[in-house]
Image (cartoon, rainbow, N blue to C red; front, top):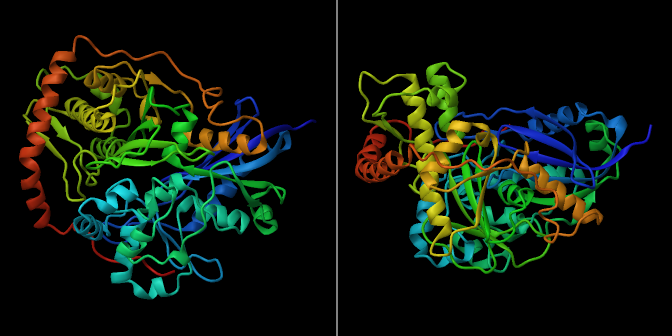
Amino acid sequence: MSRQSVVLALDLGTSSVKVMAVASDGAVVATASAPYPTARPVSGAAEQDPRDWHAAVAKAISALDLNRLRIEAIAVTGQMHGTVLVDADGQAVAPAIIWADQRGAEDAMALNAADAGALQAIAGSPAASGFQAATMHWLRRTRPELVARTHHVLLPKDALIFWLSGELASDPSDAAGTWLLDSRREEWSPELYAATAAEIETLPPLTRPGTIVGELRNDVATEIGLPDGIPIVMGGGDAPCAALGAGIVDPSEALIMLSTGAQVIRPATCYEPPTGGLYVWPAALPDAGHWNRMGATLNAGVAIDWLKRLLGAEDIDRLAASSAEPHPPLFLPWLTGERDPAIGADARAAFLGLTAAHGPTELSYAVLEGIGFSLVATFAHVSGTADAPDRILIAGGGSRLPTLVRLIATALDRPLIPCPMPDLSALGAAMLGAHALGWIALPKDARSWRKQGQPVEPDATMREMIQARLGLARDLDRAVQPMLKRLAMTGTDRPTGGAADR
């Protein structure tokens, strides 16, 4: 039986690894996934064991019918910002500290306060908890013995590439999320090293997305059930790869990604230093000189999953659709702090306007509406003073929730075009693998693999009410956040503790 030539994309997500086999015409031939846990040994912690990533990759690949696939290249993308400490023997010296970790919050605030905007203009964003620079700053203060054993500091997807190929490498689209990259020049920044006490020799060399960085090692090939020698292709960070997978490569279009958190991404053709919580970072494209304006909110799927656990209900979207209460409560969704628009790890969530008449349907509506309202603020921040994009695409797991998508469309007062692909980040990585093999040329062919659904229009019957509630939610958030932050200071939820040794 003849085998079909494919690129195998690996997407190292927050809760699972996804694998996607894609043919030269962009057809998705096979997909699989495997989960891994996130440990929270102390308040504020979010850690993962890289060995769990490796086992999950092997498990996901084993679910594919490899007898009908000829894997021509493996392209890698993954969760951004995390910190993997690697010793001289190439072994992780502690669990990986991922993007959701809050223990570097005070360090991030100190970096931003000392900078007066100059360093943020270089990095393309303010520092935030979970960013590698903030995490390393915290580790140097609290766990110097771990830092002393560290020879390399890697991002999660780069640690996976290192395991697969034995090669140390990163790319600008992912490296920007460390707060150690000069995002205009797309190279490591001496000014940011100095400000964060980073050591240049611990950081991997940079290469362009879509570059072959090495080959699959023999021992790892045996472990994951593939032939050795398969080319390993540098992908990019998951968010910029998702933009590429959606075909978003110029300012005429924008993308909303709804998953655990949510991102709004709009390409830019020149570098402009960011303001507030905005990110301006290199795009995941083979050529330099392309950037994405990005805003990230941490609380999208997080809020939905929290409410599911609270109510013991699975279909929050259906519950929200059935709400008939004329005055549902408002929800401020900052369950895990926030980056944009309510910047700060100590921002807190709240229901406002609860009455005895409110139940699961009203709470479900309020949570979805709160997610939509946070995205309106983020979208406005990303668009800035430029002309609005001609088209807005929406993707990710949340894009499959019809009530949520219509709420967001109505809050934005713009139609949204769904991208029905199961994993745009993996598809973007596969496109970079295809570029490396000469199957396509990027960015020229970026839209050639795109699939999209029917536009979701704003709900005209709800527009006036939602716009009024949007303004009220903004005013209430400004009014109550100082009190919620004071409340947080009285509790025990402030980030403490340290990464545990193996």
